[in-house]
Length: 94
Image (tube, rainbow, N blue to C red; front, side):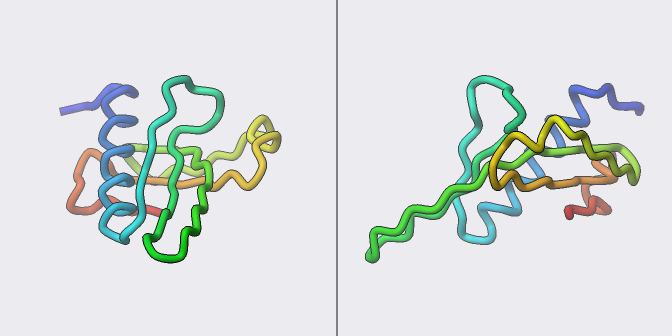
C-alpha cells in the first residue's frame, strides 16, 4: 500500500515520539506549524532543571535527505530524519 505524505508524516512523528519517550525524555507537539514539529524536553525531578529543544522532523517512505535554509532562523533547532516509515520494523531515525 502506498502512503500519502500526511500518512508518512504521522507515522514518522509517532515513531520519533516513541523513541524519545523510551529514552526518558518528554515531548510536546506545538499547536501551530512554524518550523518546529516537536519540542523535546527534560524536567528531571529533584534538581529543578528544565531543558527544551525544538525539533524539525523529516519523514520519508525511503531514504531521503533535505535541508532548507528557512530553518536557520530557529535557534538550536534539531533536525530529525525518519526513513522507511512504510515498514516501521525497518525504520531508521537519525
